Image (tube, rainbow, N blue to C red):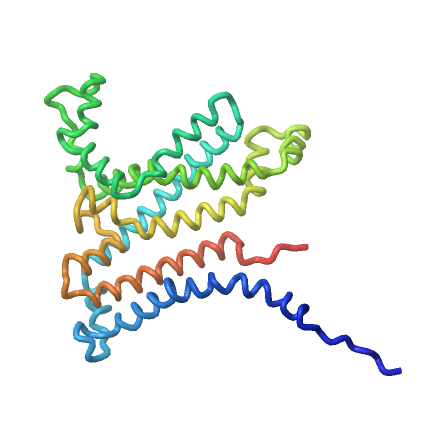
Length: 298
């Protein structure tokens, strides 16, 4: 007896293509506005300033620049310290607000205010605040903490002190972003599992460490990877407060070569390629270490 095979009709084939058709606009968007600039930058980073020949001079100039090594160091310190500090505070705030006590919604609204401000506004606000006669010294004087002649010179510290000052300013703006991701994850957790932990004698720290945090893993991964990527790309607040090359970081050097040294456009492109490679490398390493590439067991 010859088996009868059913052929796929037109509507069935179209139904299978619907997911690809829905994703197609996003793919086209990324090809035009992401892939095209990346490929173009990579191509021209190996060209001379007149686009006449291929060269490695752009990369050689970067690697021989002492500011490059300093930018790598400052960026690494900024990423490690800021991400660690911001995650700890954001997690604490998310846990507090998730308790849904009276006034929790007010606290949430207040916490979200810095996130709504653009980086330019944040830089201008804190630059004027940390000036010798800025509003920070005025506030401390009116509170009786400092005398009229004892004004604090916030912007006169060493490079390391200035870097930590930038970390605090950045944390003020970015913590709400991480907090809202973690809070959304906490509100989606199963309350029964958490209550079961207390029923079986678990303390608050035990339940948090062994139940809440593992269940919150996907939200933590999302918050951390997005924050790591944005931390590597910090530059605008630093430039607005301290100017170029006071505390050099990677992305600041890209802008410096492009805006301040107008004849170094191709070097800026080479710098942007290096920044893209650093972001990609760090992101892959983090996802690998965090186990994001592992397939979940059925």
